[in-house]
Amino acid sequence: MVWAAADITTDEIDGYDKDCPILIGKNALAGATISHKSFDPTSSTVTTAADRADEYTPIERVYDGLLDLPCRLSQHHAYTLTLSRQLLAFKFSTGITFDTAIITGHNIASGRFSGLGLRVGNGDNLFSSYTNIFDDVGEIETLTSDSRYVDTKLRSSSSQANPRVFSNVGWLGVTFTQASEEKTSPQIGELVLGKRRQLQHHPEFSWNSDDYISAVADIETADGNPLRYTLNSGQAVRTATLTLTGAAEIAAVEAWWEDCNHGQDPFWWIETPKSNPRAFYMRATNASLDFPQSIGAAARILTLDMVEQRPFLAWEEGAF
Image 1 (cartoon, helix red, strand yellow):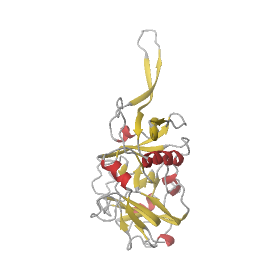
Image 2: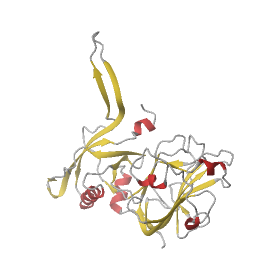
Image 3: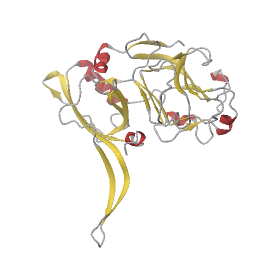
């Protein structure tokens, strides 16, 4: 099985260059046939590597859709590391396709790791035969917080100007690099490998990209000063109205709706994928697609009512 890569479509490039939102409805990992998976810092060969993830935090957690339940390397093996680079690896029976990566729940900054990488390969040895595909075409070395990492411009060479879509990927690894004396267990909450559904328009007037709510309970008191208990805060809510005028954009919305199981499953909303790729984990407020025709069959008006699912991005970014 040999992986391939090509530029995303012309319409997708146009929307990306205009910094229009991206919708991602499913994780390729969640639907993949995984023939082998391992979290092993001592072996370079995927199919012979042992799964050294902590028994209470299994690898399945990185694609279960629950962002706040992490998978981590066993602390025992973290203390006995012989390599500065640890590898979370997958082998697939059928190749997967994706063009966007989101990594949540990691401990790169707090664990004092010096690098986070994503690599693909055509064989079992992901240490000696691989290609890095993050935008930097190497490991990311500038993460200063544990907030989710979003990469909407995957590529295998710095000479490639546009984001690439990777297909028929049979071997894939996530790497963590640290100084040998650190002995910290690397962890990931969710590894999302998604196929973008690229919009080519921005939300229209009255759009609020800073709309957040808190859930509180007020209790009236005799002295007239009510007590307020906070259940949660910093939850993003969005209502986006867009007029879509092209067949490709309409098809992208229809594909996204199918990807998220017709509104039943959460999805990713990336508001500004080029200038500041921040990914909100959303759910449609109503499981119905408000997508009527506008003027002519080639134009439609899309209204998206969305509410964020935990963990809330604002908390990760320290805004609350």
